[in-house]
Length: 208
Image 1 (cartoon, helix red, strand yellow):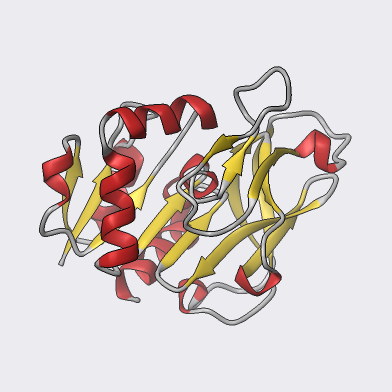
Image 2: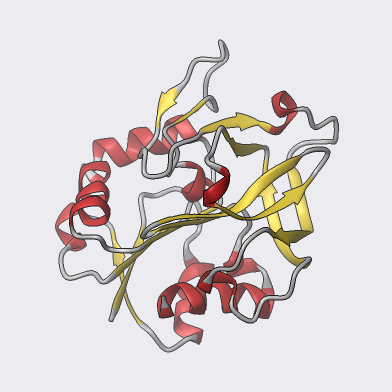
């Protein structure tokens, strides 16, 4: 099995690579579109701005290749933090006029500021926060309810089918933090920065 870690120049993927190395799993850092070939599972990390990151994915032709791998070849994908948000249909981050920008549209939903969703707490939401498990899933095997994971974000998934929510968290308001539809998975927190329990999430994804 080869895990493809999608590197589009946004954020440090070193922690993700370190986690995969700790699990002794083969991986390939994908920096060119032809490197998507012969990949068994994909990880889409992300730190930064929804609009800017999606534009980079488009410019590198990664959007087309990701959708082909996931929708046609049924390759599993795990989106992490902004990577999870990019799985959505659209997002508003990057606009000063509340415009929406198209996402990968792999799990229907809209990415909206936590403030607009009703949170009155200081943004960004940074630090450890517990996850309320809503339904059983292989991605949370050996993970107790209300386990703490590490977060850094100001936006969250909204308008998502409740059946796709495995776990949520609360920061002024409740929002989805583990999602899944078919072969598409996402975590709003950073499993690669969440110690042993985060490593367990990544191991579970690889074993699914």
